[in-house]
Image (tube, rainbow, N blue to C red; front, side, top):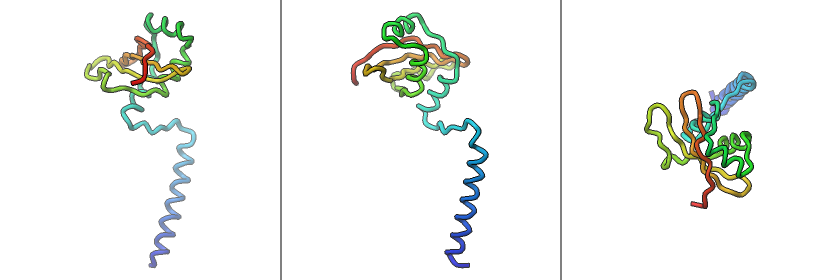
Length: 126
């Protein structure tokens, strides 16, 4: 069999496989969260959140609501060098993101069933 025939069979089967895969996965909430940042953000985002008094005060000061904070967590970046990931029960993560041209630093305690936003503080550029 010539190379061009083998290539044709390969591409035909590959394209049918892609179409079938797209059909089966189109209705599901599939995601590709393989990086440590994406896995941490996904873990925090899926849990119910509670807010400390300090975080609520900062939210009032900077005119944020829970939707804004959830979006900032969803699209933020985790600073693993400042985070405490060694504890077994609740890990503390430091996330950074900006809102209204102001950069913010979140301290979030991520437990098994609850994510607690402990503080929201503005910071200057690194």
